[in-house]
Image (cartoon, rainbow, N blue to C red):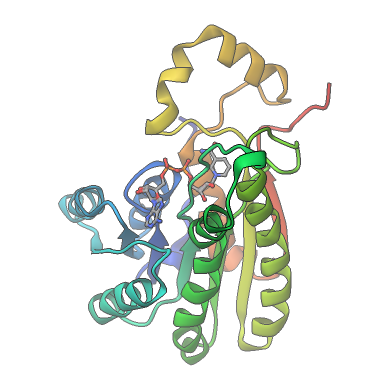
Length: 256
Ligand SMILES: NC(=O)c1ccc[n+]([C@@H]2O[C@H](COP(=O)([O-])OP(=O)(O)OC[C@H]3O[C@@H](n4cnc5c(N)ncnc54)[C@H](O)[C@@H]3O)[C@@H](O)[C@H]2O)c1
């Protein structure tokens, strides 16, 4: 792994990462902790969230975990309130939780559609709403939403997921306008294919590796830590003029 920059402006800042028990969210939680941020993890996987919290504490960092399904808005806001009590006023929010379950368009039901919106879109708005008073009181803050390149490439079997992820770009742009006067920046990171624990086995599949690298300019598979390092910069004071945008982090997708 390449050498990492230090973002001193993140030290001591309370940050909440939804879906922080695994994958990109876990990498985010560990990366912010490495920079001295005080990390709150929200995840429905309480064992996984506790394990990430314990790893941060064992390394001398500050962390807390709360179990919640982000689709349950009262439970999500209660989890954020509990973490705030332990960590202080929230200054950074990483809206990361999501799930890219494949689905068949022709048999999809209205309930399934609503469920996908609840898991991939709705919670971002209410987590942001829950931390806005803290950020206003602190004179500013950063909200980073996780989008995806899947809809940009018309990925198959992901109609509801892709629709939710496309909407996150609009949510980011509109929210940045409303919160900008309070010093709150809102950004979206759209990762390309990123190997997480869930998909790590694919790294040993030559067909997957060659197909993935064949569509990238950068000849390295994208890792959760690559996405986390972008989030560090976006949340730091170095990115003070960045807001409202979607940044694509996909190794440079090549149309063939
Ligand atoms: N990995 C990729 O290739 C990729 C590409 C583009 C976008 N993304 C986006 O990045 C984000 C993270 O993806 P990942 O690949 O790390 O996923 P992952 O499945 O590896 O981890 C997701 C984490 O979120 C938690 N989570 C999922 N649904 C939840 C819910 N309803 N309530 C609470 N916690 C929940 C899981 O328990 C898990 O800890 C997602 O928003 C995803 O859509 C991922």
